[in-house]
Image (cartoon, rainbow, N blue to C red; front, top):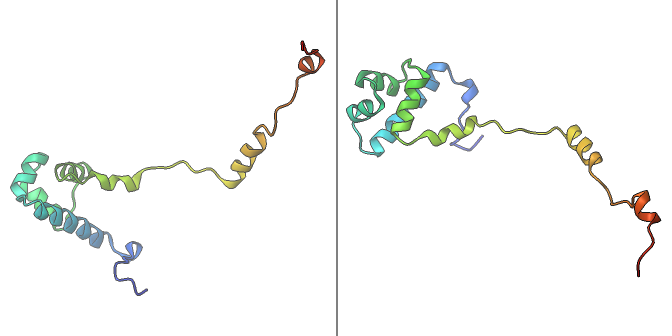
Length: 115
């Protein structure tokens, strides 16, 4: 591919993925002009834990979430949102069940008009 923005996430090792996440956190921390100490204190973690995260070290998911919250980056959680999808077969079944037209009931057809 010629697109330089394409990243083959599947081919990356877990360590490389962790480093990418760490670089993302560090980039946003610095762009907000916050020190490691400030972010760590606000996230209720140690500065060394934040440093470990930024270097791609092993941390817990709750720790990552705390840091993302402090940096106002929880919007990335949108990619984890589950959207219900209906299969084409189920959609066809639902379409068949829809009412196609209104029908007169037997009682309505036997009534005489008052006009």
